[in-house]
Length: 162
Image 1 (cartoon, rainbow, N blue to C red):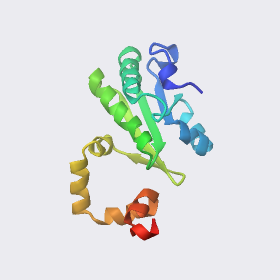
Image 2 (spheres, helix red, strand yellow):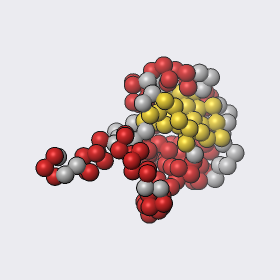
Image 3 (cartoon, rainbow, N blue to C red):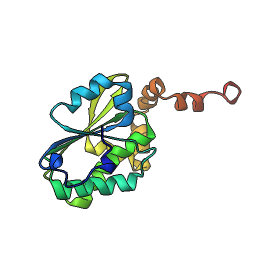
Image 4 (cartoon, one colour):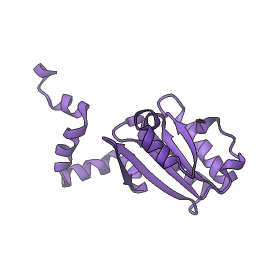
């Protein structure tokens, strides 16, 4: 499986293609889900933890400009701070390339479930003051967070329990 950052931006397989960009961990943890998503798409992997996210954004912008894909699907592991960068990178690449005609779908995998999220969710995640407003308006979000985040559970525990 090719890494998106090691792919030629004018590769024939990208021209007008439907592209899947998945976090490395998606394929490793949920191979069946990855294979299902990859059907009929030019599929690539990426790990923003080990690959430069700015380089990733530039590569995606170049692919969009040079190969004009029809659709790009991003799938990552929910809760991973590194995976979140995939969603941010495609949004930034679309902006840099000024490409509104490319259909983009964002998905996260949570406990084996594929969940579609909006482009706006990735944009809002970049602005912590807006996230803060959401928490203030909907404090029950923190209860839901506790179900998934070990870091949140640790932070809420009394110092003696840490």
